[in-house]
Length: 414
Image (cartoon, rainbow, N blue to C red; front, top):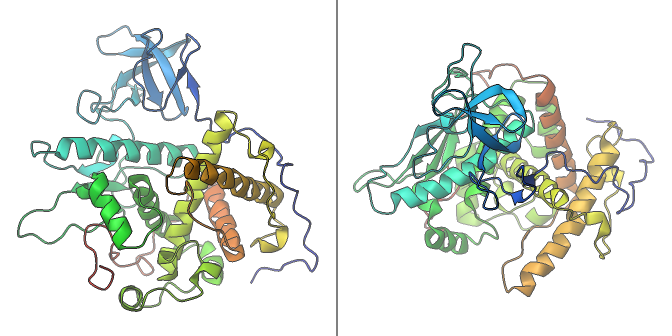
């Protein structure tokens, strides 16, 4: 158990966050000074070629390099780039591939090298659905890299890690074949292609009584399972995890069945960020992890465009340090300010969504125990950025995960 001071230090009031600078900028400008965006490959203002450089976390203006199909970043004559091999496909990947030390190039960027299986693009609608999935996947991978998390491919490339790497299968349902189940198993994340169909996804969301369901949300949830294997299982973090989330050795299949038959516990909202998080400690971790990624990326994007939560005209009841897992951590005050700013920011954004007759931008409430769990995730991420966790211990590696409900709606929930 973690020792908590008898009188926790007070939280900085909302509006006194240590910094209003984004951790990772999400706004970009072309060399002509006009704003450009994460997915752009061409400046609509001056016509400059653009590419996303994942290691720098920047969209760069490009000029032709010394060899055919090579590029140089504006103001950087040293680093030679090529476009990702998926640039000319329906995926339209705008990421750059830097030359290796020997002058060679990987055929695909760091995000596309994670692809293990893609759908048959000759089938009707498959190409457009896959394009949407690739956009969400690149957003995910760019954030993972920016956070300093290990992002090695289990599928291809010189950086391939066959034992601990990550890869994606995007599968379409086949007549007479088992249903495609979205989920994670030992580094392989499977996503049902139908999740990219807005109508299908919205129908499923409504049937499952979910407040939120997106492609990016799926990716962030499932990659949370991967990083539990990679960063928590068999490491010193495991005791803290069990203290906050529970014992993951509880029967997972039985917990999932109980959730679909009986529904969540009546008091789930007092302890979890979503009803699905109450299913099992693994799902609590994955849902909390996904919310942490939601919060960090959205907050960084808001700050990048000058939307500072400290300046919004709304009063909130801020969390204080007593809610934290480690209130004496050196970064506790900064983390707490981030959470309180998030509450203020999303309160205003929810009102904006309601003004347009849309669902709430962030349809969740953070109870006090969830803030402690979010700090735990935050500390695990920070730790991983400086020192990778030990290899996964097969003795504690979870079995192939039953999927988050996606392609198939269980009869009890339909």
